[in-house]
Each structure stands twice: as structure tokens, then as C-alpha cells.
Image (cartoon, rainbow, N blue to C red; front, side):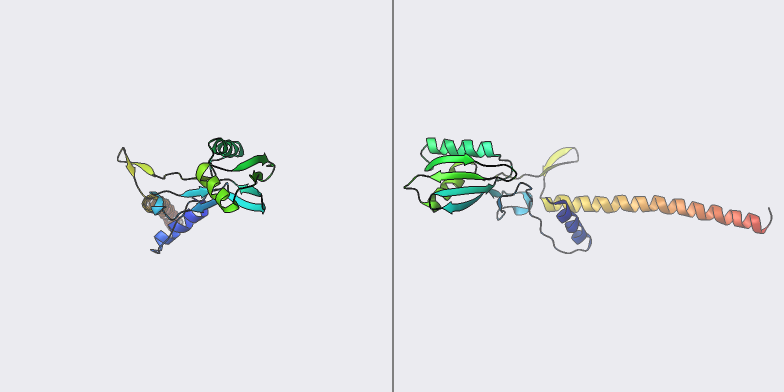
Length: 187
């Protein structure tokens, strides 16, 4: 999750406002989080595949956890198994991902895209199961429950911290008051 979004969700919890969190993947690609279920479900991560011309597709972003070598190997495996109709795959990746896929002459662009998602690492679907240790046992919780617990714990720690600080200030005030009394009464 994006750290800024987690902080905003904690602020919403403290203000008793509703919040919604979705996973954030820094590598890019497309995310389908309809089955996310507050972190207990799954997400689908897809490569960004664009049509360059009538016989060429270009992959411009990869799903999280997939690199260009893995994707190309999975595409080639799909070709060997007859699942995808591609003629050649060229990797022009430098600063940005750019993998060109030349399609077979009889290939349909839309079907080729769907085949790349279905039969290669162009789409991955990790299952999510946030597990935390509670009372020395692993327990599955939703991301929202974990965040609510952490926010409650943060408030408790801040309260204790403020109580310690208040005690120090009270002691300093008492000491200053005694010094003032000693000076006034010339003791």
C-alpha cells in the first residue's frame, strides 16, 4: 500500500470517517482490485499492451513481480504450446519497458491480447492473505482491521509519551516554584 494513503486512512480512522484502501504496485501495469476484499481476496495485475500496427503489439508496462525475461520466456512457452499466435518477440527495453510482439499473419489483435493475458505472465493474480501474530499465534486479518489496530496502538503510545512529558513539565514547574519561594523568602 502507498504510505501516504495509509496515513490518510489512519487520519480518517481517528476522525471516525470511512476510508477505502487499494493495493499500490510501484512497477506499473494495470490493477483489477474488484475482488480485493480489504486485503483478504485477490487482485489481477496486467501488463499494458498497446497495438502498434495491424500485426504488432507493444508491451509498455509489466505486472508487479514480473521482469522482461520472465514475460518473454512465458510468451515463448505459450507459442510452443500453440496457445498464442506470435511470430517474433523483440525486447527494446532500456529506461522503459518496450517489448514488441510480431503476430502471425492470421492472428486477430484482440484475441492475441487476450491470449497473452491468459497464457503468459502478461497477467498474474496473487492471492492476498495478511497474517499477523496476535497473542503469539498467526491470525488472518483484513488490511482495514490491521490498520485500525495499529492506529489504536499509536494513540496509546502517544498518550503514554505525553503523560511522561507532562510529568517532566510538572516536576520542572514544581522545582521552579520552590526556587522562587526560596528566593522570595531568602532561604
